View (cartoon, rainbow, N blue to C red):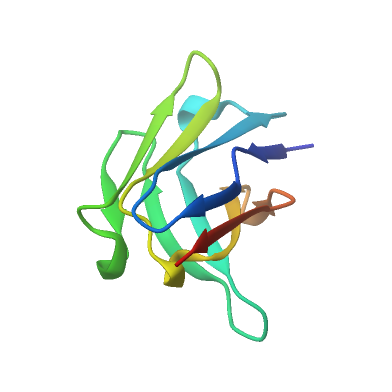
Length: 115
């Protein structure tokens, strides 16, 4: 069973930085594409950043130049470094992967940016 456990959320002032971490277990992490999504109340869950098993990255336009996704296969961990945070980045952030055509999600970590 694949498990994803996020950490690193919290309260930060606008302009500040946070780093989210997601540790994966139950699968061969190095073979998995990974991603971070975020969701605010009443809205759909949106892709923030993704990284393939080969290390190719892509980002939502609103976070380009501010967020960086990376992975450490030796630690089965994917990171989201967030800088120059804005109030509109406030959301619950979820880690994602897919295995055998099934989506797996972490429990989510709250990020709150105060303006």
